[in-house]
Length: 278
Ligand code: C2E
Ligand code: CA
Ligand code: CA
Ligand code: CA
Image 1: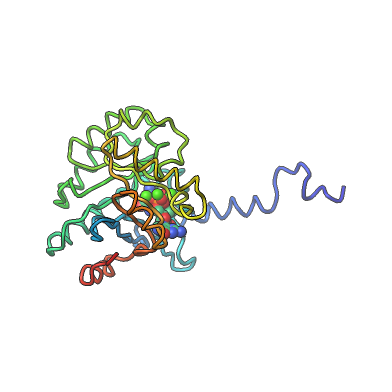
Image 2: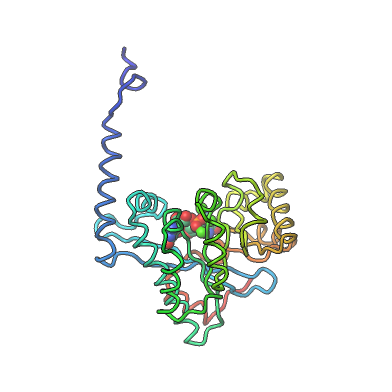
């Protein structure tokens, strides 16, 4: 009977109450965040491991609340998804990222690929293609410098995924599979879907040196991708050893704290001046 509180069959606990109200609080905050200008986009460099030069950046959203401080996207993106707010937020990120990329190009920086994360709900929205078209024409960005990051589960759960992806590809946009290898999906989609790039998930990259199985997986993914004419980017590269492993296996690009954390557009300007070296 003593244990009841901990293990008993209570359906509603104070902890649950707290979780629910925290979620509600975040939701209310999220609804106001956009008009209050609390979102920012940061950019994480993606490096060509053979030349050491910057080839692209991934756009990542940040939310700075005046009282709560910085809230991680891992925490608020799921809520934005659930409530549908992700549609507005996602469109804002896309616009911001495309505008910034065009600005860099107009300033004479070497052209970069801008990768933007697309959530499930966003991918399923019926006017996704038109929305992206609108953003490309209003910002003037060449579609060849836009890449959309999709996860395996997104494309598997979506009706007409192939058609949609083909429309995007026909516009000249690149498509990549994010967190590759974590979606438990069959590999057969790789031959039907018009994909350009696989992004090896950080969970594999980080264990290259202490788990021979992860090393084999990474090696195999790179090999398979190349046989299918796909490019490979390894995420979460934190050490020189990891980078060397990837270079030796001819991985194309790498992204991670070893090179840079995600940084502001202003910090990117500094980076252009000093160019990262591998
Ligand atoms: P993701 O797309 O897999 O993004 C990679 C995450 O790993 C980012 O976290 C990045 O800051 C972090 N990261 C990069 N390099 C390293 C490294 O070397 N070590 C470690 N430990 N972490 C590294 P972040 O920015 O907190 O984003 C988390 C997730 O939130 C993203 O995972 C993505 O799923 C989602 N997200 C972020 N921004 C957006 C967005 O604009 N739209 C959508 N739909 N989702 C977003
Ligand atoms: Ca991503
Ligand atoms: Ca990822
Ligand atoms: Ca992830």
